[in-house]
Image (cartoon, rainbow, N blue to C red; front, side):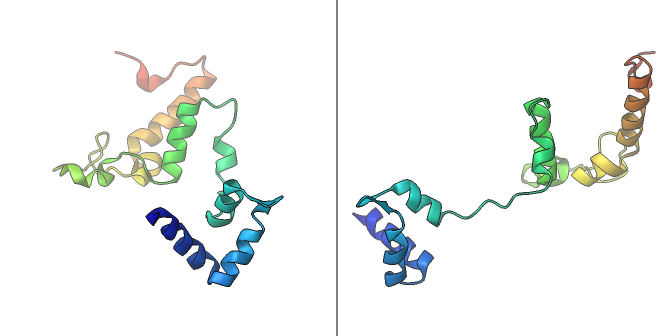
Length: 136
């Protein structure tokens, strides 16, 4: 019974008053029956479409790569600057040791990853071999 009261309070708060909530719920009834799906659609917050979402979620891109890019775009990658709850003593980048390891640093300003990105593009042009990955 308590959850029904909570639902009622949520509806009244969402619509700004009891009378407005009743009017809003009237649109959720079809043939005298109240449909929970329609109530849910009225109460939930609308999804904000990000411009980059359609670029990363493609059928030809493997889901694991799309997921990593999605995490990067939302700044949710597990980089050292975000792992403060582990009480890491050293948050510097493992590649360059020059800056804290952050999303911005890893993708755009780390000398190693920038060089690796350039080399991999060049490597693809030369039969798929990457000079940085050659074992000497």
